[in-house]
Image (tube, rainbow, N blue to C red; front, side, top):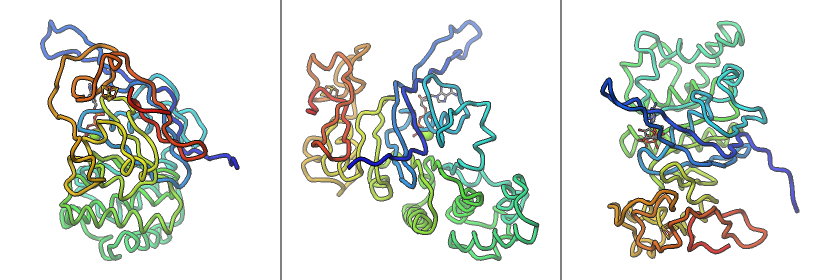
Length: 323
Ligand SMILES: Nc1ncnc2c1ncn2[C@@H]1O[C@H](COP(=O)(O)OP(=O)(O)OP(=O)(O)O)[C@@H](O)[C@H]1O
Ligand code: SF4
Ligand SMILES: [Mg+2]
């Protein structure tokens, strides 16, 4: 049986390079490639996790999907090519929730004003209807209507993030991009926010790109996961395959970093965090840190599908992976 899968986001062969001007006036410009031929799709109503260590390019990919930075390749959101020019067209369909809720909220505006803003900007409803919608959204995100008259400074970090999530949902977007949305919160507050995403998911239809450096967090929340290392997707598949049939040495290393998480075997074959050998241009991106590297790894491997025929794809970029 093959049914057409509707993709909310289609990222095809995306590359991104930052130009570094250096700090001194005589510094030479250097180009640094951050994203390398990234391809992934986010399906309708799917929670898609993007995981990888700091600096690997997660936010760069999110910003490209949001239309905030230039890139090479193609990014389609709801079937339309993404460009910086058409950013406004997408503003109601794609919303973002960031790591620091405090900086996302205007300290001089009440919570009610901030949450009503998207409705006002898109001229949706009368003022009374907008206020009623804010009250009902505050309840959905686990706060009550009285919070509408409060200022951000009166709220805890977790409550502020609830407000940001509520504000992002006001226009009923097709896609929410949550970039490290719980990393600044205490573990127990973060867990409640994860539960909130799940509760809202049962009530509303939307897709989410959930970005985190924690594999156990994305496993808890997401249907599929992509693991990124130095701007390359190194493993991608269902959350179960990524965390129960972990194949890439780097994913195993991420797994080993979370105590008590994942199959016991991943603990004994954890890779090293320190470089073991010199970088080789064009090699597997994990070459310098991988205990299993051989000469074959001096050429960057393609992603291969390791899943049995007929099953959901489980893509792995490693010379040891067998299709
Ligand atoms: N505007 C910029 N100019 C130059 N380099 C940048 C710029 N933004 C990001 N970078 C570099 O690109 C790389 C990827 O950054 P990015 O913020 O996408 O990583 P990340 O995976 O989101 O990390 P984190 O988990 O810390 O948020 C980093 O090395 C970063 O220093
Ligand atoms: S391709 Fe080689 S270096 Fe890269 S992850 Fe696989 S074994 Fe390690
Ligand atoms: Mg980031």
